[in-house]
Each structure stands twice: as C-alpha cells, then as structure tokens.
Length: 148
Image (cartoon, rainbow, N blue to C red; front, side, top):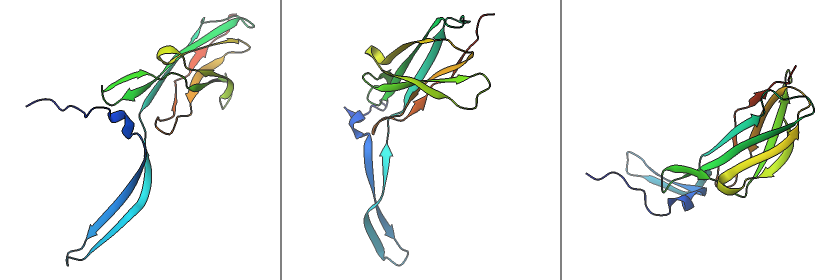
C-alpha cells in the first residue's frame, strides 16, 4: 500500500472556513443549517531567538537573530516565512512583562536580525502576531547577563 500523499497545493486551504450542519433524528426527521459557525484554519509557525554576545558589556551592541518558519502542508515541512513584521521584545531581569523594542521584517528564508544596545540584564525574544492564514508564535526568551 502506498504512503498517503497530500493533494497538490494544499496550503491554499488555510483561511476562514464555514461550518454547515445536518442533524438526523431517530424518527427520521432532520434539520439542516448553513453557516452555523466559522473558524480559522491556520498554518503552524515556529520562531527562534539567539542574542549574542553572552555576556555583554553594559552599553555595548547586542545582536538578536532568529528565524520565522511556517508549515508547508504540501511538503510536510517548515519553510522560511519572508516579508513578515516580527517584534523584538525585551524583559529586564526581575520584570513581569516583555516590552516591544523594535519591529523587523523577516528576510530571506525567514531570517531575523536586529542590533540593540545592552542597558540591563534580561531576556530577548521575537513575537509574530500571525496572519489570516498563519498562527501567531513567540520564541523562547534568550537570557543575557551583563559583564562584571
């Protein structure tokens, strides 16, 4: 028996879907309704983050890189997602929340890169808010210590 193969160009099915329903009762009666609900079918996405150098001197340049990828249902793999706005976020050590520092557009193969000034120890991460066809995702934070 041959392995299952997805139909060609299945990625186009991501987007808004409509749910229709038919209910059949035991007595043979039935009920049909169109547009009972809607849901968004989104392709999964992944995001990585790496801040260097580690540790870094206070006031020195820090480079935060990463990669945004999304599922390709036809090939059953993840590929770079280019041309997307991705937010670089920072959370100082001891702080409760991340804050957005800048927005970067993903480049070739979904690559991300931003240079920032190290002002305090903390964690850097990337956040992609998603699109109508691709799920939002947040990378794990990469903690950076200041040199002593």
